[in-house]
Amino acid sequence: MVPTMALDRVPLVLDPHALGLAAAGAPGFVLVLPGGGYVGRAEHEGSAVTARLAEHGVPAAHLEYPVAPTRYPDALDQTLLALADLRAGRHGDVTGPIALLGFSAGGHLAGSAATATREEVEHLASRDGSDPAMLRRPDLLGLGYAVVSLVENPHVGSRTNLLGEVDDVRAAELSVDRRVDATTPPTFAWHTADDAAVPVSHAVLLAAALGAAGVAYELHVYPTGRHGLGLAEDVGPPVSEWATAWVRWLAQQGVGGQASR
Image (cartoon, rainbow, N blue to C red; front, side, top):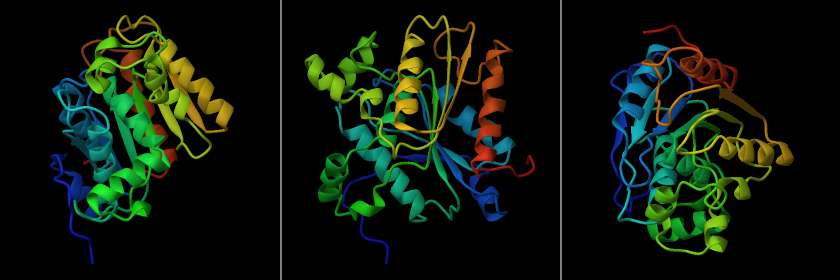
């Protein structure tokens, strides 16, 4: 029996083709976390991205996770609950790996879920009445121009909206690169070299941490492109090629790979 949910869930918005793709045998699932500095959620990084994934046979949804004035750990809790609900079949049958794909601050949230600590999981389980074993990290991680560090070249807005006024010690504890361990899932990340809002150094820090922990990763750094590009369709190659590379990487990990709808 599926346990009663104690905590209210935020909306998980399925792509209109997600259930049909899953019913047709498309393996895996991608849950998308739009960016927005932890104060909003960018529309072009949500349904447009899930629609592109559906075109390539990948079931997907985006999550309307909580933002300011709510603080940590609310967004992380809702992301872990959404992953658990997907695995429990509350949004239709899902077979195969579940990936998180996060952009900007949504990338920090995705990275936080992919490095969730035992203490975070146990605290959430005690509030929701869930089995801690069900509140697991995602199987795969995708990041687009993600906020990684909250102390080194930080995106100040994201840090403040997530944590309020805290010292660097606390902010460092919630920097994704400092939370990586050997059980962090395989990761695909992309960034642009001239991103003026979230420097490419964030992606480099993460890659170094993943490599040191022995975690498989693929990093694409494109020469130019503003922050918040989403699918980058209005910019074109080479940066717009990230989505093709992501779908290919997902197929290699056992997600999608079905014929386009």
